[in-house]
Image: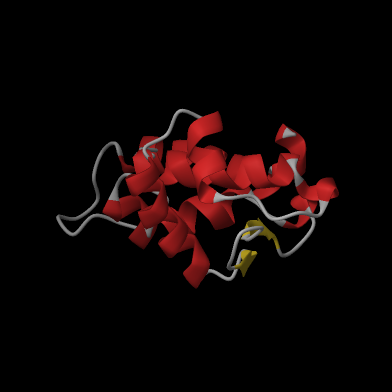
Length: 130
């Protein structure tokens, strides 16, 4: 499985919001970027992608920012990575269930590995990492 910086930033952002969940306050994107040594400009792009998934509440203004819409245990890593990356498998053939060239001799290897990775992402939540 290959997770790009989109997926990485998305997981960092969502984990950071989960760590501040009980404070019930809005966290600015600038604070997320600064505290995690992330590019603010790129994080803004990732936030835009995550917004489409309706993962958090936003507030404009001086005290505005972002906070989780649901409890941390209600967000799977799969949901976040899938939203950010568009797909989870690094190989199209595994995600679609087979190779366009016929039966690949290593398909079963990649498929078994993908199942393990997928199971991990679907069974881990933000709560597990705060």
